[in-house]
Amino acid sequence: MARVRLESLKKHYGSVRAIDGVSINIESGQLVVLLGPSGCGKTTTLRCIAGLEQPTMGKIYFDDREVTHLSPSERNVGMVFQFYALYPHMNVYENITFPLRACRVPRKAIETKVKEVVQIFQLGGLLRYKASILPPGDQQRVALARAVIRDPNVLLLDEPLSALDEKFREEMRSELGKLQKRIGITTIYVTHDQREAMALGDVIVVMKDGVIVQMGSPEELYEHPQSVFVGNFLGTPGMNFVECLYDNGLLFLEGTEHRLSLKRSDLFAKLSSYQGKEVILGIRPEYVSLFEKSFENGLSIAILAIEPAGRYRLVDFLIGERVFRVRTDWSLPLIVGHKVYLYFSEDHICLFDRSSGEAIVT
Ligand SMILES: Nc1ncnc2c1ncn2[C@@H]1O[C@H](COP(=O)(O)OP(=O)(O)O)[C@@H](O)[C@H]1O
Ligand SMILES: [Mg+2]
Image (cartoon, rainbow, N blue to C red; front, side, top):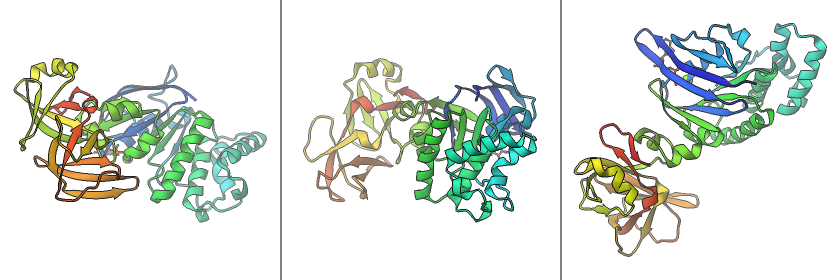
């Protein structure tokens, strides 16, 4: 298991910039998630690390050894894709030992390794079954066992759970997280599913259009998004946004008669250059409280819709032209069409530059 370092990695296909300057440092044993919408360059990044693509520019290191120009087999990486690509005519034993037999590892050493992975992935009763007749979750375990049996430097997983149905995907996700910690193998996990990323990642790298837009712990990304894009992409539902005009400690919410008066002095300092300008206020659905009675800084707005969601309800409002969602418990009686008072927790207000979408305060 190795540290993995990507230095200004680029991969261009003609005029398509699949990845355009990606630099990441991954500690040994860490699980790093590459997260982003379809087409943002996640798979291309993994394929470059595996040696299946030659980068246009940039360097790749495993520990202090540069591997940029090594063949896939010289790099010793384990890979699992969305479709596990097991050999259907082989049984489980033959599938998981294939990488070792292909490198002519002695039989005794193979048996020792098989015992080990069979125990880790709980494949004990399955070794003689044809891979193709197993249920998807078992096939996934076989694919993982095959990927790690050679003690790879790094494990690369490309949307490995997306072919499973939702309930099962959650089970496998938690199992996978535990296994990764137990084996302690450096892992790069690709997904477009922010919930999966939040649940699994020690570090999440958010990508868009071939570049990294933010990287950090799940908490950092959730609480302190550095852009409207990240605030919106993470969270179920994502962050709410409202266009505002800033004037001397007041935020005038566009398209409404509402205004908020800010109390936090650190906000004034950061907003000083935005005097008289437009900014975007961002706040997560759980940091807005609803009240029946009026009070300072409470915005009186009619309820547009109510959606029960287990312990909580999602309550929709219209602010300006945007739907604004609040997550609340069941204590307050709420009726569609009736007005309630919204109160924004000022500690959790984020402000973004209107034209760039970059954070001013998070
Ligand atoms: N072999 C290729 N030839 C041309 N364009 C490609 C090739 N592979 C990927 N791309 C393009 O590079 C971009 C990133 O693709 P990919 O890495 O597969 O994204 P993701 O895995 O995040 O969905 C996309 O615009 C895709 O169409
Ligand atoms: Mg992909």
